[in-house]
Amino acid sequence: MSVEASPMAVPISPGRVNNVRLRLPAIPRSFLLSSLTVAMLLAAWIVVTQMGWANELFLPKPQAVWAAFVKTMTKGYQGATLLQHLGASLYRILVAFALACLIGIPLGVLMGVSRSSRALLNPLIEFYRPLPPLGLYTLLVMWLGIGESSKLSLLFLAGLPGIVISTIQAVTSVDPVYVRAAQSLGAGRRELLFHVYLPAAGPLILAGMRISLGFTYTVLVAAEIVAASAGIGWMIWDAAKFLLSDVVIMGLIVLGLTGVVLDLIMRGIAKALMPWA
Amino acid sequence: MMKRLLVTLTIATLAMTLTARAEDKPAKVTVGYLNLVNAQLVTKHLGLLAKEMPGVEIKYVKVGGGGDMLRAIAGNDVDFGGLGNPPTAIGATRALPIKGILVINLLDYVESMVVRTDKNITSLKDLKGKTVAAPFGSTTHYLLLQALKDEGVEPSSMKILDLAPSDIAAAWLRGDIDAAWFWEPNLDKAVKNGGRILITSGDMTKRGYPTWDIGVVMNAFAEKYPSYVEKFIKAECEGIDFWLKNPDKTAEIIAEELSLPLADATRMMKGTGMVPCNKQLTDEYLGTSAKKGKFVDTLVSTADFLVKQERLPKLLPRSDFEAFIQPAYIEKVIGR
Image 1 (tube, rainbow over the protein chains, first blue to last red):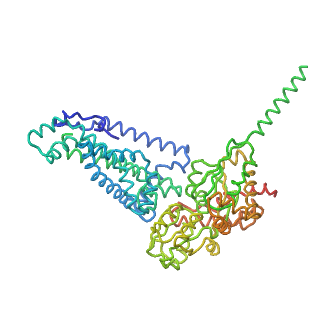
Image 2 (cartoon, helix red, strand yellow; image 1 turned 90 degrees about the vertical axis):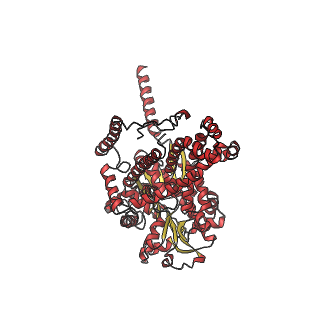
Image 3 (cartoon, rainbow over the protein chains, first blue to last red; image 1 turned 60 degrees about the vertical axis):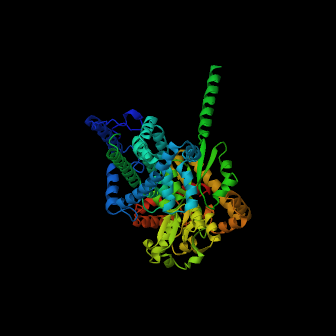
């Protein structure tokens, strides 16, 4: 899926931050290879279902999934069309993700520049980061009820640690030479933050945001299990109850593709905001 | 000498083959039981299944509701299970590899719709604009929609939420919902906290919408170990007999199994109908292999309803539901 290496995989050395690195356009060969994988999967799916090797209850034919897609697009599933379900889910994801960024990035910067605040807040972040979302969710539902707030909180909590941790890493890996150089030129705290720390740490922060958006996305179905009546996650969950596997698979494909699109948008934003990355 | 040896060998081989055949039994039997009040709890508590199946590991798995049970069956996680009529209609329509072999309970006021007393809800029409919860795909979800339809109330005029029974209880205590149709033991928590029963599943039986739970067996298991299906039924029938003959002791068992006060357990028992095994073959219930009973009618009308709700793709012919109900095993057990 990812054509270029994720920025997380290549730690950006501070010395390169100011070099303008030209990104090579995606090589057609890799695109071809990716298409081949998709085509192979689809072919395997068609063969397995056409030959009757798989129980249709568990693996419906591609045509059936397509038919479910068309029907959900036009007639809807249980009172909402596919786009409405998608809209409900995207709203939840984007609001929660925006909140996670709004809180996570300043928190990460603070923890990155100040050792004491890092020591103060680290136990909290480190403790809840590995907790499984469903375990948290039970408590969130009891505290916040079955409405939108518990769903948003779960998604928010899933997204937050990724951002905080990568922001801390990004800020602490800024070359102290930059900071001292700026300080010797008379830069104050404000200038340091906006003209040194954030531009230098930006690419890593954005990489963290991408990962965090991914985490938020993965808990979507869990968040929509309790008392939702719209959303792609809910649709998948509800269809599974009635063993409508064509709707389940269609929903999963829509979820996957939407995830890819969201990631592409994030990368586009990164490129536009920080061409030096 | 040689001859004697040969004879001995033959006998030994024969004996080994015979024991091998006799040993042809499952290593483990997994029973998925629904988290509700019925005689399966008695069977479990008294270890009746283990008595019928010596040397077989018996595993009981508690399953929250019909939707989860369907998933467990689809995933081949259980050998025996229990399903209400809507999940059964779903399973039969989607050709799940199961057969219905036993009536495990009839649902009376053990499943009810509770409404918040301070909201002045005296009829289903008062639910307009309110928040109502039911576990989707279950008997109560089916009855809720059916009852609304009969009274001419649009489901879209209220907010109907899909919640598991335990979540309904939690949401009720928080005040998030105004009404809910679900079942004991969680139902009582809502009633005791500002709730009142508006309509029971027993009321709906009288209106022509009976709900019940049926014991099912996986087809593969039944083909491989038919005698163990009979053993299972025998054990469950013993549990049902115990329930009918010793109500006081049964209440104690249920209280212990579900960690409930004795008074609650007694009330829930009374709200549940239990059918003795010899009566299960009458037309009212399973019927006989030659002539299947009214359970088929219920399944057909439930499936028809779900098709209209767009929860099922198409209504299968009656014969498919007849094929699902399999009284043959219970016929053998009670010797008919």
